[in-house]
Image (cartoon, rainbow, N blue to C red; front, side, top):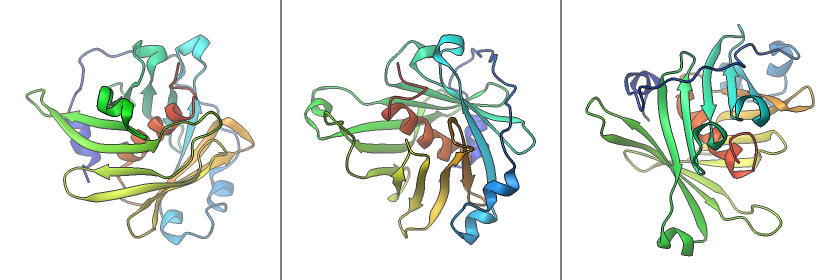
Amino acid sequence: MVAVDDFRRNKLRKDRRSDADDDIEQNGGFEEMEQTIDGNHDLLLGEVMVVRRRPHVVNGGGFVVTDCREKTIFKVDGCGVLGTRGELVLRDGDGADLLLIHKKGGMVQALSIHNKWRGYSYDYQGSPKPVFTLRDPKQSCFSITGSIRILVQPGNCYFDVRGSFPDRDCSIVDSTGSAIAQVKEWSGNKDIYSVVTKANVDKAFVFGVIAVLDYIYGESTSC
């Protein structure tokens, strides 16, 4: 898996956007959240982060990720900021681009029963470097059904999303079924939720996947 440090060295764009929503209010204690991780020992040794969705009418949507010290770690912009449907950008706390994620289009995709999302970083020459491909079943009239799978490049490593993201009760699991990250409800407010990551897991990858889930389910990054 591509390391976070590798993402930080790769810049997708030179422009940086200011964020008026960096000051995140904390609701509840991190110690309390650590007690809701279903007894998963690996995740208890990991890190708890808080996600806050930004309102479309004020900041164009997207969300901000903070750590236990209320420091901004990641920012995600969607089409409300970028002006392009099916495109997402994950930035670090300083506004440097880490991942560009876009939804695949074209006739072949239109005929497929799945949507495909691809995440890229860029090398020093500006050439795209594939990081992951996320495949989700297309929406029916009522809901999204079926599993969501993420293939990681290079190699044949894969992950699955299990549970319900809209209900803030889901996990990203590896090919052995072991959770590397969990999304949990935070004080009953779906605009603010927690993400617990296993130690040494690439957090940029985790929140890149969460950005796509947010868009798939019509939340803060969609428009």
